[in-house]
Every structure is written in structure tokens, then in C-alpha cells.
Length: 359
Image (cartoon, rainbow, N blue to C red; front, side, top):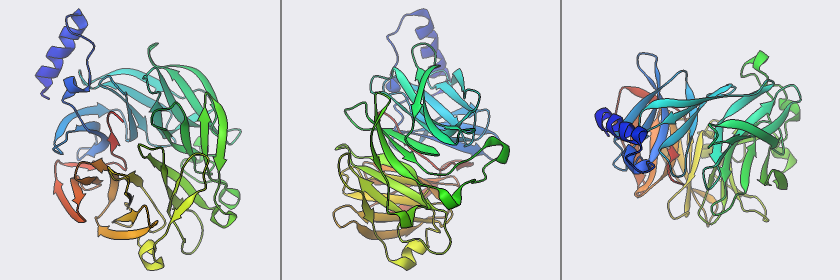
């Protein structure tokens, strides 16, 4: 969508001459992703179904993930953890709409999720003096005003998703305690205890932890299938090799780990940057920017099916062809029928996540 058309529509909206805008008015982006430009500036990009960049909107600092409003062309771009700000962006006008500031004693972890009706935004946060995870509740119609918070069910909540067709949140409590005074230092590796927690109406309804031998495997990133199965990716904080870096869980069931041969798992260097189901939920893809590899698991067999080399591969999400991939070298492409096709789309470096719009 051109800047002039965006400004024209924004002007009509201001006069009340057009209905409430939708994502179609912003060019129908399929994905959002934060990126860094070569001149040191940061942007939030809208990416179309044809993998074209529809818009680039300035950010005041490096972004991490974004949350897309379910109906309006509006996105919340979160600062890289442990950030204390998030910017609400009108993707029609290309201008900031509001700034969200973490309350005193809190910092964001870079992720958030909307309620199904878009009336509420939930943000993963750290109560860093208590060393406990919190989820902030923000009133969207009031202008993203913070109105409440509740316990995340663990320490270091990172990613958060809403289960489809419900208001239940699943939260990846990574188990790692941090404090702004220590930057990104991890303060409790010896005692960390990651888990998945499920929260409904602010109340914890289920917590899932892995075997104690995996207590240094930080549960970090999530995807959720249409049927409510959660895929989770982990980051190993222990010494030596890790035995697993991904798993699945469904509310009320048992966690199931996705296995891979030791030598191929070693290629991930203990780090899952993003995770995604395929469109039919038959496959799960994990990326490792530090390992420069994408690994694809068969859901039925719960085992590694394919490995694809992609330097600094960060973002992954489902697309019509299979998976869309972004890299820190500005490449954007897809894995289709097991084949990776990447092209450099712009002079930028994509951050770790590519976020679907309208999910």
C-alpha cells in the first residue's frame, strides 16, 4: 500500500466518512516482523501473501515480536527484552497511536496477545524485585491503559498465545530470572524451573513441567494449532549437549517431546528462536539463528523429519506453501515440499519473529 493511499484513507477516517478500517485497508498484510535497517534505524514491516513488503513503520528502538489486533490495522511492537516500552502503531497511517510503559518494578519480555474481540491486550512481564512472572492487562478501547495484572504461573514468562476459539492463554514461563540492573544476565540458572501455564479469566487452570533433568531447558516460544495443540521451543542453559529442544502439549494432556538424533540436534546449538506448525498442523518447524538451521518435525511420529541450512534463520510461520522464513541477513522466503527458497528482499536484518496477522 502506498504512503499516499494510506494517508488518504486515514484522512477520510478522521472525518468519519469511511467505516472502521480493517487490515485490508492497510494492504492485507499476512505477517508482521521487526527489522533493523542498515543505517541503524528500526522498523516494523508488514509482509504480504506474495512475500512483498507492504509497509515499513519506524520504531524508536530494536523491536522483538509484535501483536496484531484481530480486526483493526493496529499492531503493538514490543521492545527487545528486558524492555520497558511497547509502541501501538496505526498501520493505516503509519504513525504511533500510543506508548505503553511497563509499571514501576516491571519489564516486558517482548510478547503479547489480544483477546478474541480485541478489547484487551495481555503482556508477559517480570516483577523483578519478587522474581515472579506477571501478565499485564491493558484496556484497548481506553487507549491501551493498564487496568490489571495476574500471575503467569512461573518465572520469566516469555511468549503468550490465546487458544483458538477461547479466552484461555498459554504462557511459556522460561524459568529464568532477570533484573534491569543486570541487563540480560540470567540470575538463577542453577534453580530455574520452566513450565507451560494455562490461565483463564486471570486464574491458573493448569501447569505443565518437564522432567527435572530438563529443568535448565527454558521454554521460550509457542505456536498453537487450530485444534488447540501447543508447540513449544526451548533454549538450553546447561552444560554439554541437550536431548530435546521442542515439544507439544494440549490442555488436559501430557507433554510430548519431539526427538532428533544427537548430532542433528547439536546443530541447533541449544537454541530455538521461533517455532511454528504447518498450515495442516502435520509438521512443526523450529529455527536456530545461532545454529543457522531450520529443523522440521513430523507431528505423528514426533521425530525430526528434515533439516534445512539457513544462516541466521530466525522467524518462521505457516504460509500456504508450507513455512515462511526470515533471516538476519534480510532474506525472506519459504520452505515448500522440503525445498528452501530464499531471496533478499530489502537492505535490512529481520529480527527473530514473523507474526501472522488475523490469527
